[in-house]
Image (cartoon, rainbow, N blue to C red; front, side, top):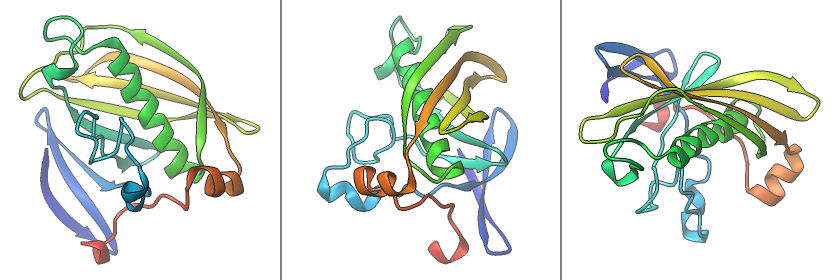
Length: 186
């Protein structure tokens, strides 16, 4: 839940309250919003996809984070988040890590999941999805992500992404860069 907006120099910082803790982070700008008219409808991040997850992302140092409301619409078992949705949340944050931290488009070539605890769904349930780059090997990025609820890690993933060149990112994936909000954009 966004609690307040604070100015720090030229950057916009968002103060988020979750589980009685405040996080101050910069919101990542969705670089594909101008493509909605052309068909951009990503299940993970498009704000206009009526069935989608509508994830938004914030930069927290080396990590990206998304706070996502876990609706019963995405349950597998009663009030438990479907494992495929958990994998989607972590794959989506990994794609955004590619965009924001490496400034290129990428493609998942491997995703290894570890389901540690049931992830709850329902009204008032907000999950914290976090990820970061673990290592780079030539043009492959190894990205770690986790879903946290109530301060506990519920599931984890390690993904390997192929990093496309800047030219291919622009020509084939309409990627022109991924920035964080600043004061002038408010």
